[in-house]
Image (cartoon, rainbow, N blue to C red; front, side):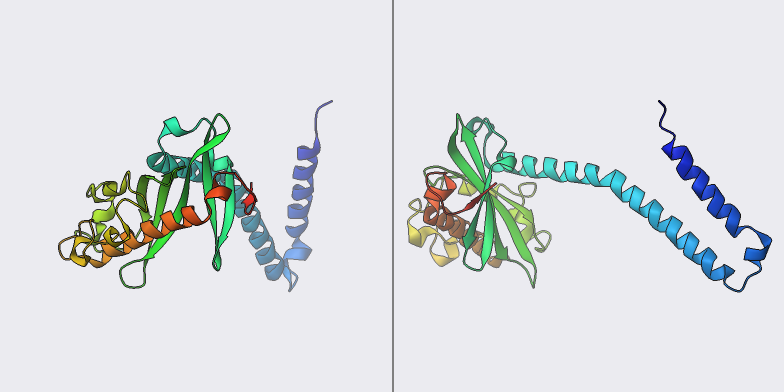
Length: 229
């Protein structure tokens, strides 16, 4: 039996519009208010329908962007699951950290998560780092920042390969004193005219490795302590 509900809805709107167009209604003192209210209602409905139509597309693009970012810091050979759908949230101080688990044959082989560092002025640098189960860095990517173009923006892989110098590093390599830029006695290069930016990134990456070490058992799904999804 055909579904005639849409037609009924259209007929209702026709009746409402016809009612508003009656001469006695149009000549009433409240007609302008009713007209404006009706227009506002129609506009609101149109916006709502448009939002419903694009919400799914936006969510899908955000999911694809996240998956692409995680692939940059955890190579595909480390997992056969979807890390985006295998997460654990761990409380770290006054904030929580969502960690994405990369599993192969059921065992967590690596994890990835976001970490931040103070940037230029009052901005913030947001990074994603990947760490294997032994605490070795698989990759670091800066996904947003407000650093000065031509100076601090060398943290981007499109501008410099500097951030790749973290690959293979761990808390023991270099030793603690080496986790600094060369100007401060460490092993990591600084940028000409922009020491503050690489210094902050080095500190944040080291902090990410310390976070992994402090919560290793939970992150690798070897004990409870976080909120799994």
